[in-house]
Length: 325
Ligand code: NAP
Image (cartoon, rainbow, N blue to C red; front, side, top):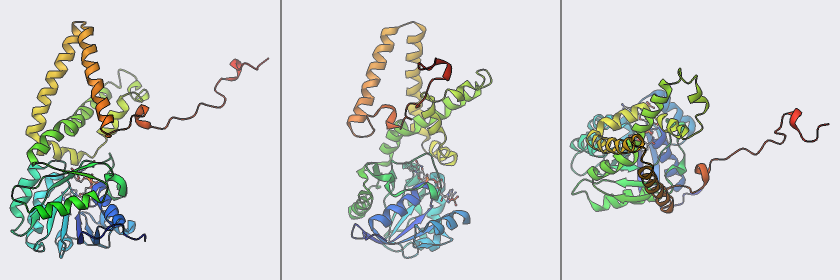
């Protein structure tokens, strides 16, 4: 095993949930040496066995209570709707002074669901690594997932700043950029940058798929256009996204209302043949993509830098080749 790169920040890390995010944390924590020991658990025996086979934790236990015993950092890496019940289960068994965190994509509801079950003397620092892929499960994780991605911490008022600093150092060791904000602010920002785009992707993929009879499956055949990117987003885990929309209902509905107004604006411009309005709107929106690239949040390479196959060596069917007699 390679020598750890960092002085350990915590002795024992307990991971509850070992899917994409939990298993990526395990891999990164081991690689960077930020903890001395990793204990993991997952709901199903199949996932626990897979974690053992992958060798990404020092110990795999079969209950949440066993996982948190003696842990000084506990990270709950499960769908947001399940966090409250898990907090109730582990609350009485946490080590005094432990830092408890999560990775949920919604912060207000998780804080409200978990905090009441955590006894005094436990430092609760909710977190959201804004990093992921459309894949799930322990095999999907990788240590580099968080490099150059944001990790947003939303400590409730009165949280010990030292606990926040320790957790920030933990995420920074994975190459993440850490920012702190309130849970409500997080939920509003993510509603528009992440949750609404997923809702649009789920919708447009359904609309196009419903047309497949009419278009004789051309929707699927020609899906390499912009539609392909929507299908990738819409292949994300349904449990996780069900929980996100229910947990961030208010902010998502607010953003959806604004989005519908903007769609109406475009609809009106098209209906009225208002080319100038369309051109102005598109020019303004194109500049937004430029600023995302300039901030280093995405690649400037054409088509997101996807590899393109080489030209075929012998592209023309024989009857058209120039050297034929
Ligand atoms: P995942 O790959 O599907 O893994 C989920 C884990 O949670 C699995 O270990 C699963 O156990 C366990 N689990 C599922 N339902 C549970 C329940 N009711 N009670 C206890 N454990 C349960 O999911 P993930 O992508 O790692 O997402 C985990 C969390 O990270 C979610 O809160 C999500 O919002 C957040 N997040 C996800 C992304 C992303 O892009 N995927 C990005 C940032 C944050 P079994 O395998 O045994 O069923």
